[in-house]
Length: 617
Image 1 (cartoon, rainbow, N blue to C red):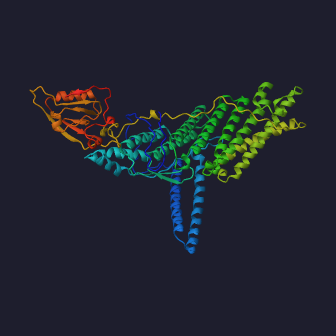
Image 2 (image 1 turned 90 degrees about the vertical axis):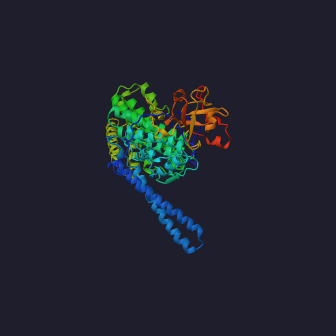
């Protein structure tokens, strides 16, 4: 799938990403929610989404109040009124700050998305972007009647209702492949609906709330709707990855892949859309989120090494150092002034905790490798940065030197874990994540116990600052680009005709009937030629012929033949139907508006030959 240009979110932009032109027989109606409009399952995750909705609505209300107060402040010159308005603005800004803190607390509710965390540092999944309901029915019905000249618009109530139900289902998808399929099916369907119904004058406004800050953004651009839905695909992958993470090799492998797929989605959105109206869709934010998900994928790779190679402490040490390096890159990204102001502070704290925690883990495993395994000098030196006393092991009293090196690394691990606990205690919202403190405390106690044992054995040796472990991994986490074309859909408005002709940008006349009749005994034709398929077009009409006298025009599209719909018929089939009709037939035709305004010469783009030869009738 390729894109020739990146659509922008500017008001009224009609550029869009072409997702797929495939059709399929996906079971229609499988996503429809019966009962009420929003039949949420009362789970922890959906309760969290409901709370997110409430905060979004309150933020929107406070922003509207602030905007009105600021306009009033500029409009009046009264000092007394200025003082009252300033006091009101102070209250509004305070409320917005409180709501911002509540939003940050929701974004820190990592336990909701993780079934089995065990003795691991929690992951950071993303919450879904929230939107508001949109009633497409009036716009689509009016366009069917006005643009496509449909007389019985009731025939399209089913497709319209299906499209609206599909969008509604995208607001509460399940955390599995079916949830991903629902969102991607809507995005594909929206691309088709956009081509059939959306013009620069279409007044449908899409409102989405920022996933990080909760601020609303409203635009008419369909690209904004697509980008927001695709963002939710990436967010859903992060939730799936956090849920899949477990103490099994399969679970960790699947979680790693899910985080890599999330990164691929974020990179696709960043490269395919421009001028994002909300922070979470900006390239800088998406880059930060992508690096965060790759770091969490690398975290799963480290945990896989613990399960598959339980005694290879040198491997674990370098894998942990690689994870620490990955989260350090995330911390650098999140420190950007553009990104930092809207990223929840607990996220920044947790990332910093992970940087120090996995660095401590790398030192701890290296200490174990020195004292518990037959690690050679060469292997040990390859794992350490060369600018350190640890890079050389003295030849005299080898056993004592090895214990001293082990002691220095375990001591460093203990100090780093104490720093992790300090960072955890400094963040109020992070303190609520009990599992994190449990993991940090247990790791610190284990490291401290080992250090105390080594200190008793090496009472008279000084402890030097150890070298950092060189990051190394057997599998580098990489983004997996989205294969959006594999999600195939069925065009709900297929009966309108082929999209290359029957679309929003092509104006067609109202269908008219052309009745042709000739003498069955006279060797004369109807006097017109056709070319192309789906639909067949009239390429030539002879002067003073039966066809010309009946009103057939060069450039007309034949959409009906003897009360049969032939919009999708191939050239050969239509010609054969005409031959079978004999001396009399009734055509239903439409004329491109360009031909009606510019005479009878057809617009070149309006007539496609598709490689077919003319058929003379």
